[in-house]
Amino acid sequence: MTNENDSTVTVTDPDAREKLRIARALLGGYAVVSALTLLAIVVFSGDPAIVTSAVWVRGSILAGASLVTFAIGVAMAKGSRSSYRRVQIIALAQVVAIVVIECVPGAFPIWFKIENGVCGALLVLVVFLTFARTVRSAFVAR
Image 1 (spheres, rainbow, N blue to C red):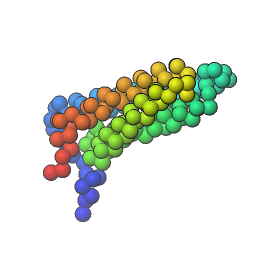
Image 2: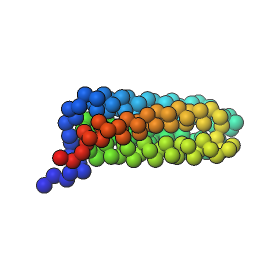
Image 3: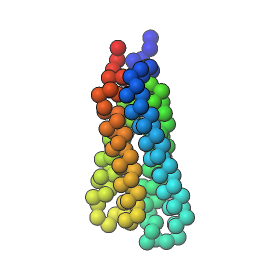
Image 4: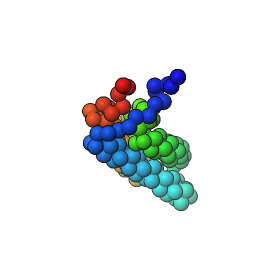
């Protein structure tokens, strides 16, 4: 017996395939930006005005989460139903977390808030793409 949540679909709609390809690329961009941010944190770690302990924590979490999200996005683009649902949930949750962080005054340096804004913009696009009608219908259980 196959678990329906773990099934793979063949995405035949060209629009849905393109949206999934773009979403995967955006998740790759999110992972690259997050990894480069972690590199910057390491390089500038001696300057407490640039790299605070909060930046270390959040930057490390973002780098790890972005790599996991990208890996799930690759599986989603290949037609994994469970990965599709995970990407929708994770991307939306990360957008909410980024909005909250952006709204907290003084918690993070401005450069880090800009980086978070870039990541948030990439993830908002992923949310829109994965919730698009053609993509949703491609993953409907049949």
